[in-house]
Image 1: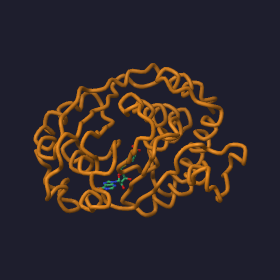
Image 2: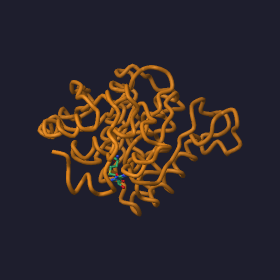
Image 3: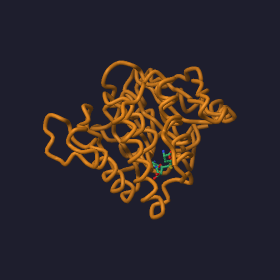
Length: 261
Ligand code: SAH
């Protein structure tokens, strides 16, 4: 069991203190993640204290790299169990979040989490049940969108290409592949935030070619130093400065098979 005091402390350190309602959402999120984990193999991390630290607090570190302007459009690419996206959306309800995963089964699970946490509809046209949190706990933020598909296909689709302010990626792919999946989705002036370990900075070096081809520029590594986290965590951030050229991303599977290194 946990009383989520580590999560509370970490969020406060990050400048986004959590309401009682937000803590309730995290607790319910952890329960649903565990219920579905057996079937979907969403994560190797399965006890509550580990979920609190290695999923929730780890995800919230992203607050250091997401611009503070109200209402950023954020896509979590390869969200799996809903991380880091949903944790950030619980902490910052102004985030307009899209969760993307290639697996339809995971999308079904994500719909359950979203609806159970009451994050599926906007408060103004709220006709859906408020979930387990009850009527008194209406989330004042933006509804969470769930998409099933490959990042390569979204990035080639004019409806989605270059339409987010921020793309998030945790445990998605090595940097050269990750930037080809994510940078095409981001508008000029936007950014890609990758959850990595400090000793993966060799990936950062080899991603230089991909970053420049796809219209990006590497920004300094953002420190993830927090008492509640292992010491090796870091965020690699890439700014989008120029349009991604036609022809990128390449067809599904190609970025991984033939990385731009
Ligand atoms: N971000 C989560 C899950 C990581 S596992 C976490 O950190 O816990 C990687 C996930 O990315 C899987 O769920 C997989 O289905 C998805 N994925 C892999 N390649 C993808 C692609 N090209 N487009 C969309 N989703 C992809």
